Image (cartoon, rainbow, N blue to C red):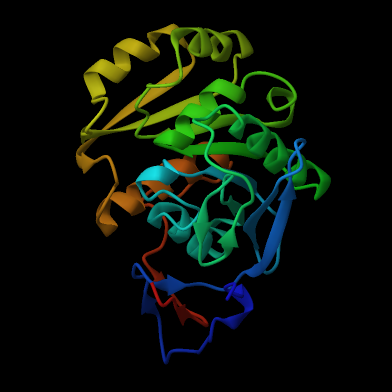
Length: 266
């Protein structure tokens, strides 16, 4: 059965409540479908601020589906739970072709990052058609490969402001893709865990020298999957700092919420 984001049960605590891993803050959430140029239907969710302007739009590209990555991978799930309320940020999550989650299964099958180009294009096209402003690609692991390979070329390049990369392995993305980003001149932030399994901060800084505007940030103590609230929060703060004018504030995003909250099952 497809998960319905309207099924969250919000209650009003007696005072400010701590924001935990499963805390869901208010937002306008809807299940969406994306349609690729080669005829696949992809499933996803869009979370928007309940009120006020949209400060930025995140088009999230998830980790490798053959190794457990999907639209509900925990950093993206927490982004959708928190950022619409805390920062006015819209969060678009979707399953690439052949990927399944509680939302459902996207049509097609995994294509090693090749056919997924059309998935990226479909997501960006959806955001443009919905008039979602200040659009940014956010890639994690395999998703960074998609952002690097397809974010600096048309039809995507002219429709996004830049990208934030989490744990880039640089397996499929080559130096040529980095040179395309350099030529595009678009902002690129690269968050690299100290204990990453594939590419650690010093090596990442060397590889991304090809992109003069890239900002490479090594995160002490973190691992490839950003497990732990400390590291997930750090990622969300860095993203908000990059994509919004106000940023996350001098102490980062709030860690408490004084208003209705729900608790996610996972």
